[in-house]
Length: 315
Image 1: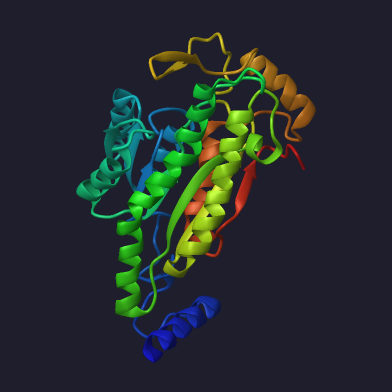
Image 2: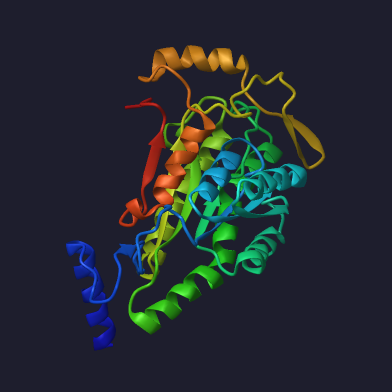
């Protein structure tokens, strides 16, 4: 026990001073390595749910550009495979998995697919989701349950399913060398979850719930050097902020649910002018950049935090 504690002190000391021990290269994400990594996520394996389009697709491509091997998962299998193929065509490594994150068997299938394809899991991004709006006195039980299922229960179940891989790997590393490499979980929330939003009681409640989940995981898994943070997005140009009459929809229990907001981009632009200091809505690439930052070595001492990506709204 004393030797493990001594090793921890040695590692922390090197992190503070920036000096490696004799014969070792600089530290990257809590690990000793022979040379500085040229890319932020080199050698890491990432699962990103809902990454067949929009923000998730942007994140999958960005993570791959930074050296991660990515499991692209989406309800639409064809779109997931298309993103994975784009990554492979650009020289990266990716696999695709079709599936509904709310399905009972999905978490186990997802974890197995990542391990079968790439051997482990270093980064888990719970991004999948959609909106099904309604005012409080008209929201149906189906609407309420659907939002909690996809935005709160699904992330919990996937984190739980990944525990045997992420935690056990960390335990082995702690037993062998006294320090575990940095791993991370990134959940996706919304300003609806932090500030509320009229017409979105179900969505707001679910998105608030995932913030609480994030902080709890950070407390429970911090000892394994597994960080957990949440990105809280404002207006981002995706199908969820497009015109509700644009045709974008999702099937929920056999019912087609229109996605978007009344007025779409025009309404978002008007709102941005009034409410957002940067005077515009964000792009999927900008939104993905926040995820990359939290997954990178530069966030190695950040956990349990909610990062608002809003262009300055709500300050």
